[in-house]
Length: 484
Ligand SMILES: Cc1cc2nc3c(=O)[nH]c(=O)nc-3n(C[C@H](O)[C@H](O)[C@H](O)COP(=O)(O)O)c2cc1C
Ligand SMILES: [Mn+2]
Image 1 (cartoon, rainbow, N blue to C red):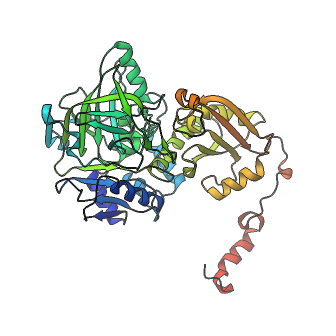
Image 2 (image 1 turned 135 degrees about the vertical axis):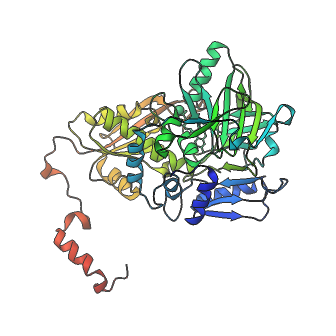
Image 3 (image 1 turned 90 degrees about the horizontal axis):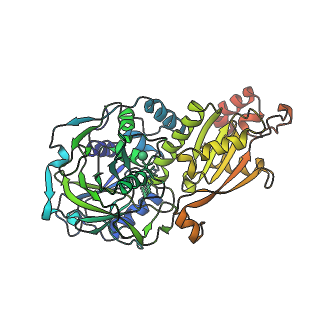
């Protein structure tokens, strides 16, 4: 059974040793952000802050919900999907794809849902009713959206988008968002702007755990994330009608914010400590999210993370799911003989490694172009291709293969132009405005026509000794006197 709400998942995390309660009072002003950053940098547990300065008891914050865990790197994501905490990268990726094949549309329940236990409209609307944290030292304001879902509906298509885009509080009733230039919500907003209409939105904070996780995935095509969320949960997600906008939201969300974006309104937003490991995005005019209603559960839990230098939520959930999206597109739809796609979390998601069969000598560049042509693969600024023998999920193997199989001149292909996240520091100021980036292919595959006898033999315990010797050595390891 999938988790019905955030609270059930929190209990499961606590049982698995993946949750720390902090009952002592902490300050929403920088202290919470600093604690959560340190948790990310030390691979600590998720943190439930139970008493926030200036706020009544009951208003809580859940920090670092899906950051990397020192117990098992993907434990909190695995638990959210109903897998054992020690599930590995390959298994998580393949299970994601297996479940994703069956999308399950949501089920709408009667108003009011649990997220509507308290309803604030008109003058009662106040975003700062919640302990919205000032997260990093250099942030341009208090961020209410750092682990959440913004829901919008395309004006002309049956396409409802769930996306995670940072949300800063301007004042009681208005927020600002950073919307990357080619994100889905941008396409929705552009369609409303073309029609000269307001775009309604709903923000869900603290829904059951798969919702936020899927909100940061670049699903291939124009797909409604909520159907994929149902597929991953193997049960429909329950939604409830909003109070003031024509949208539905996950019924058990802790906090829901409803409102509209005017087609031509903007206000300065940012900067923010970003997933690339730098304060990024500057302070610039960006779309304004006007709030018409706030609803919440009793004793609401605000989910947040303090992103920065890898590895945090950005580098745990996105690598698995985005790699899965690209793997499915290449292997299952386009028939490329790809073995696995892995996004190195340590690279802030911009170094990708792909292991593959190599059918012919023109294959590597065709494959690279196919990867960059997918929706998630646009983030693969550095792309390493290797044969199937390299375990690309192991950072040591990737560095070794790159340094020994990629000729520094012949095997490197520099591709000027192409989209890059505008938050990457290597871009010039001009490129940062337009998102005009660049790609590099590092082709570590052996030429397809190289006779097998000429492929260098790998000198490792597992590959250079006969199996019989390996087994004997392993069986006698303790007898030799080794402890581990
Ligand atoms: C913690 C976190 C914060 C994010 N913040 C932003 C953001 O502020 N702006 C943005 O464009 N993308 C942001 N992203 C990345 C998007 O969520 C991601 O690209 C996702 O695919 C967007 O959904 P879409 O593909 O439906 O547009 C963030 C991701 C995470 C994990
Ligand atoms: Mn989308």
